[in-house]
Amino acid sequence: MHIPDGFLVKEVFIPLAVVSAAGVAVASRRASGRLGGRMVPLVGAMSAFVFAAQMINFPVGAGVSGHFVGTAFLTVVFGAPVAVLAMTAVLIVQALVFADGGIAALGANVFNMAIVGAISARVVFATGRRVIAERAAVFAAGFVSTLAAAVFCALELAASGVAPAAPLVGAMALTHAVIGLAEGAVSVGAYGALKGASPEIFAENSVAGGAL
Amino acid sequence: MKSDIKKTTIVFLLAAVALTVFSLAASSFPDGLEAAAERFGFDSLAHEGVRAFAPDYALSCIKNEYLSAVFAGLLGIVAVFALTAGGFRFLSKKDIPARKTN
Image (tube, rainbow over all chains, first blue to last red):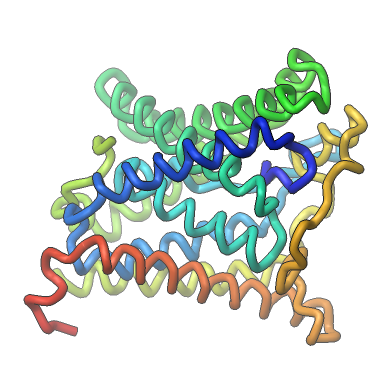
């Protein structure tokens, strides 16, 4: 769901760039000093993993493909502020080095996949784990964050006048609901493996899961 | 205990590298957004404002399509790791200057 340049009009991408810049600034302030120094290389490695996983598109039916996004996974492990910053770094590299996502559209892509993705994952995970099993909450966070990002993406495109809102949101929501199921499943698998292999990360990490 | 985090860091880096090997096996179907763009007829609006270094995850300097994709992936992994680890090091000033472990 990386928006290329040309799809969004400036009335849409400029405000989104401003909002995303502000969002990244807020995330930096909230993440500042809360991540232990030993966690820094781990966040880097997990961000690199998310980048690599995003290159693997899998078919979701009807000649359409999708890929793991990773925002929800980073959010449930490190909290929303760190996830926003890590995803922003991934999106910057994708746009500048690989032309995956436009440069003018970078703010919009950060808004959808990093900010909307992390906040929705955080809200779903934090509320979900109070009422359902933790892993089910991780699944739900992956599903909802992918779907929410896609819906915002579709709304921005519709606001740019490329297609009527209702059918576009419907089409994007439908394909990304399927992608979201895979996102949820991969997030649960990765979260479970990480928790089993390295409980220490969750024990000492003051930003895990609940941080906004 | 300390090696726990270090070990996990290495596992994620190795997993990232391993994934680049599979990148050519990725589905070439359009993704959700591209498919919607084709269906609603706005796909032709896409354009590249600035020429990126390795568009579509391929390095033009490497002729072999497979190696080109793998090295593009590796380049991206290094870039993302450098940007995030560098950025977060700056933000997590707490215990970095004080201790000289590793």
